[in-house]
Image (cartoon, rainbow, N blue to C red; front, side, top):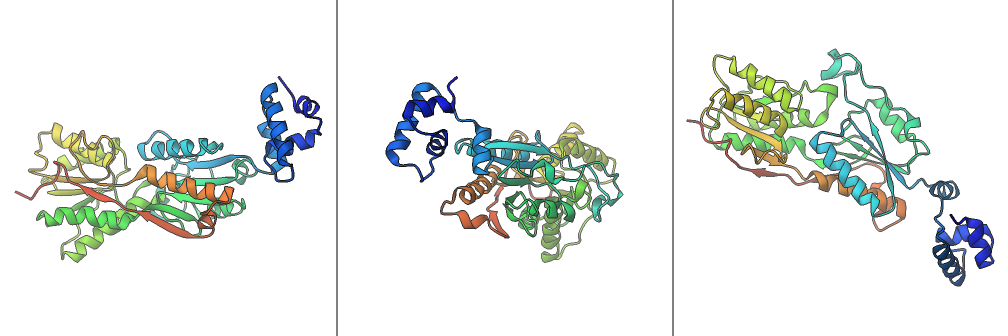
Length: 346
């Protein structure tokens, strides 16, 4: 395999000039740059990424912090980030911090601590910027991220102090509830609320939207059914509801996955959905259409792509370079998708 010295000998310049020419630095004359590039191509010389990083102080890598990799929202975000970065010559450093429970104040305070704290060494000098995917952060972790001294973007929520892109989860909860109210339901129950693990903000915000819609329509807030936002926990909720003397007539589920779990148990038990119980979810998960689930759709890939392009603009000095600096929030539009799990009360 050819070395940088071979290219230098073939072109009659120093190895330093070869390095600068192949990195595209302005200090190299255009004829020299062209001669070096042609020689490198003819000899099959491939510059060392590690050497380039040392010379430029750039890693050409973006860190992605995520609590999950297999769940739908996170998988779509990771795939989108990687695809956009690959076209710009960047790699992804994936850091998985499972949500677990912590001893921080909030709904998760009764859960045992199980997730390690975010440590600066996971990212320092290894990435040029970081994307955080709806990972609940305690103040010390936010301080750690800000102390890294590089650009940060949060996807899927709003974190004070970080540039964020997501959806208006309060509006989502309000719209889902209002849909049921508009159909004529007067008793609407929220599933997947304020006791979600690790103080995760989106379901709490959706619950606030539910509360706002209930109050605006002069209704009485029903008992909140706590649940993790998974199919498995949705099935548990469905079984619990079936043990009640009377089923709630209308359910706002904080995610499609928990709604799908509830739907499965209700249908297996012979409950008429939506004749006896109307169910609406949030996300427009790919499986939502298979279950004929009414939902509030959110643009997941678009959130991840926007965040990634913000960082690339900042790193490469494009027109949007200033947009990633400091705080700021970009909320993308959601939409109601009416299918067959909601109907007027009978």
